[in-house]
Length: 277
Image (cartoon, rainbow, N blue to C red; front, side, top):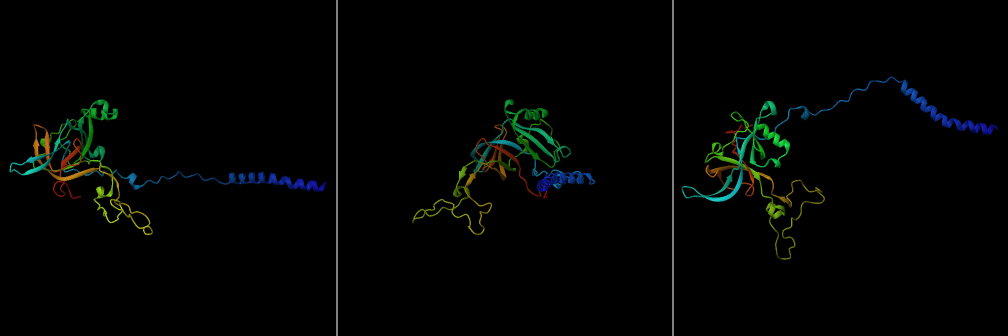
């Protein structure tokens, strides 16, 4: 009898002791004075709180958009042969928005180019153009200027009034896409020997040591996609402005194939037509 009671007395506290300890800990926790939790502090970087920085470069003057028609040979009055690129202008080059420091943080003039059907645009795009009273246009670009006085919405820009023969311009566009190309065509590498048992003709070769550094350096010239990137050709001279055909002949080659969209702006000369800073 004593043995069974001792065993029972020994078993019961095991189950009740855990409950009792749990209740004791809860009562102790609830009896402690609770301090109000401070609201979480949001750490905001200086980049978020600061004013937005416009990284768009400033243009030397108002420019236009055009369409590359192709290249031809132009004979100057002296008989000199000059290779030129013919740039045509479709319906467009209309001011669609004027941005100011008060509303957008910088001064710029937005223009549209190349008329298209309304169903080709989304409703927000159509609403943006209708607000300016402009026709449906496919391309919109901005020209950040030092002075935007004299521009107004739905104003048509005439090429012959902006550029003259002999002016220097910067022409930018999308280069012709070449697809995936090897190192010889993409980076003008030299090929290996074609005879005497050589097995490395147009291969890239070694791209780095194995132990040191143990990886390929960033920027290593290797095969990959070639072309199809934005490129700007600076300080090209306008040879002729034909108002009857509405074309401009620019000396030299410009990016892209015929039919490509081009952005033509006055050439930037630091210290002359744009500030040094």
